[in-house]
Amino acid sequence: MASEPPYPAARIAAAWQRERPGTPTESIEIVTPIWRLAKLFTDDRNRVLREAGIDAATLDLLSVLRRSGPPYTLSTRELAELTLVTAGAISQRVARAENEGLARRTPGTTGRRTVLVTLTAEGHALIERSVDAVLGREAELVSSLAPEERTALVDLLEKLTVDVRRQLDPG
Amino acid sequence: MASEPPYPAARIAAAWQRERPGTPTESIEIVTPIWRLAKLFTDDRNRVLREAGIDAATLDLLSVLRRSGPPYTLSTRELAELTLVTAGAISQRVARAENEGLARRTPGTTGRRTVLVTLTAEGHALIERSVDAVLGREAELVSSLAPEERTALVDLLEKLTVDVRRQLDPG
DNA sequence: AGTGCTACGTTTAGATCTAAACATAGTGAA
DNA sequence: TTCACTATGTTTAGATCTAAACGTAGCACT
Image (cartoon, each protein chain N blue to C red):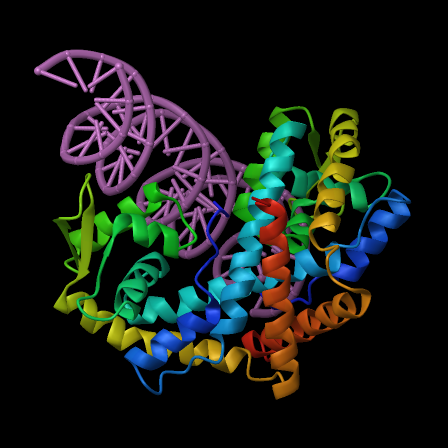
């Protein structure tokens, strides 16, 4: 997969300029590397998780519950708000986790049709066993950045995220 | 979708520290924003493309062919090397594009079982019609970055990509 | 009380990916 | 020439997502 250096984003931009002079290419050296890095991190995470016996979607779900602290309970709506997937995907994720005994669904008490999702002891144990492997590996992957590089990158990514989000939803 | 500010990556890291002191969290403020930005760019691209009557996978395929210059022809192996998906996915993409008259498959002459994929006139016209909308929109999304911010981000993303790739494949 | 609407969660159909299996052209060694 | 292997592309089964449809509890208004 990573055996061959990828076609540099700068060369993609240059090819567009060559083929279509004037085509806007300012985004390519940002958007393309972000897509590539996202895929690299995703694929690497999947590799680490395969050995831990859990899939990335389930890890995501269990992590959100775990991070919420005792009683490790959130509504499906809250879960959907805290992750990058739709309510439909959350529903399916929760169903799968419940099926595997990693989480439990109970009716909420606060109104409407709220469903509460809670980490089971088994789910708790699984996240305890896998989170350090996952995050440790990823810390390693970014460890080549010098402290000031890391700080600069963190700040720039945060700024870009805020800017893009503002453009997507000005209201 | 983007109506609610996301849970800041820094707070995800802090929650892990609170819940599991000592858990490595150095990557979170880099990896999480990269995933989020990747999704924002993907979703936005899909919106732009919906109006242009093309899907992202097909755009990707047609773009690679278009950028290769006349005769807008590449083997399926080359296509797989130039994109972020597997040979299987390329095969399916090409089949779909061929089905829609946007690309054409011909046997190669250079050996083995090489298949060559060529942009059709219809495919060429479609990419001409959509590429500026797509890239123009994305240029807009990143336009809030000051020149020196953009340069710094481009360089840091490139460095991180190279570093991560080197760790994934030291050979 | 009755009705229309909203909020919430689930289900469904379909899209696209991946890993692995499959098929076979072509190569290299004995 | 034969056989084992490699390179290339395709197919397949399954996973997981999305958008939209669906189901219905609960709310607000008349």
